[in-house]
Amino acid sequence: MGITSRNITKAYRTLPSEYQGIGLKHWCIEKLGKDTSVLLRHWQSDSTLGMALQFVYEAFVMEIGLDGNVLTRSYQQLQHLATHSWFKILWQYADKYDLSITVAPRFNIGPSRVGDVALMEIFLAAGYSTSLMESLNRCRRFKCVHSLSDVLFADGKTINFEIFSDAPGESTRLFSWEQPTRADQL
Image (tube, rainbow, N blue to C red):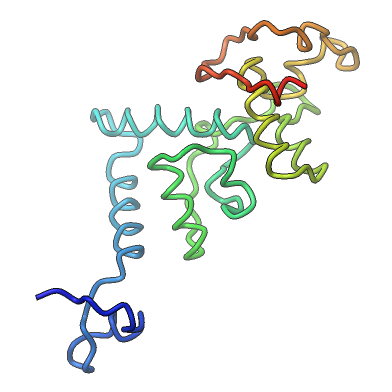
């Protein structure tokens, strides 16, 4: 027997049966609990899952392009910077239910030198629109740059004009493959 009525309110669906409710689970809370449990159990372990979680988290953070712990930032404001993934869903539910997930600082991207800041932090502070932020992020990943020091010479003031070429960038960091659209390149 299934529940077919879409008119049953969420409160009644999730209310325990001893209080005349249907007693269904709140699936978002259940998923957040299970994902948090997996993270706590396997993070920094030598297991295959533990190492995979760390690799996926590093790729997730590089894709978004912000400094610090991304999981403590506003999901609603920054969700467009990440593609659909396990960590994006974890971030969404953690933000929705006000759960703070903190990882060790060594797993987060920080400034390369004093006074350095992530390019996406600069674009965010400038108040660019969502579509422009997505475009800038695609171009950033294509050029393999993360922070201001990646586009400036050692003096910290002169722009390396190779950043304006159509060629993909090179970096010692690992970036996912990216191809900007024609609109991004204008």
